[in-house]
Image 1: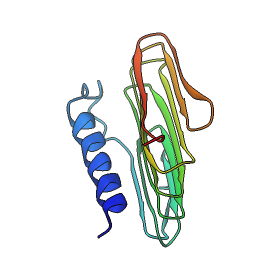
Image 2: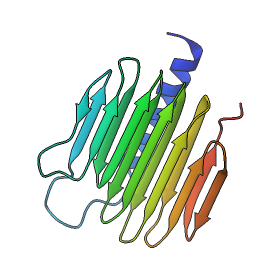
Image 3: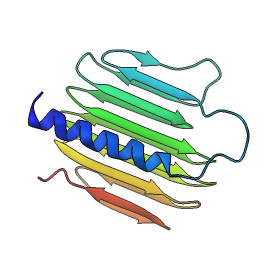
Amino acid sequence: MSVVKRTIAGAFTVALGVAAFLPATASAAPVTACQAPFGADAVPAGGLCSATSDASSAAAAYGDASADASRNALALALGLNGGIASSSAVGYAAPAAIAFGPGSVAEALGLNPGLSIAIAAPGSTVTVDSLGGVTCDGPGFAGDLTTL
C-alpha cells in the first residue's frame, strides 16, 4: 500500500474515531448508514443518506448526509442529531464532514491530495474547500491539510 493511501486511510480512521465520541441521537431510531466501497452506490429506501464511489475510491455517509468519491479518494459525511453533512473527494483527497445538532451544516470538498475536516456544532455552518479555504459561521472546527 502506498504512503498516500496509508495516510488517507489513517485520516479516515481518525474521522471515524471522532464520530464515535459525538453525542448520541436523541431518538431510539438507528442512524441511516450508506457505505459505498470501490464502485458501489448506496441510497437506502426512505433513508436520508447517499454515498457513491468509483472502482478506486470509497465513500460513507451516516444520518442526513451525502458522500461522493472518485479517482483514488475517500469521502466521509456524518449528519447526526439534526445536522446536515456533505463530502466530495477526487484525486487522493480525504475530506470528512461532521455536523451534529439542530441547524448544523458541514461541507467538505477535497480537490487536491491530502486531508481535510469540517465539524459543525448546533446552529453553525462550517465549510472546507481545497480551493477557497475554510469558513466557520458559528461554533465549529475546520482544517485543511491539502497543501502538504
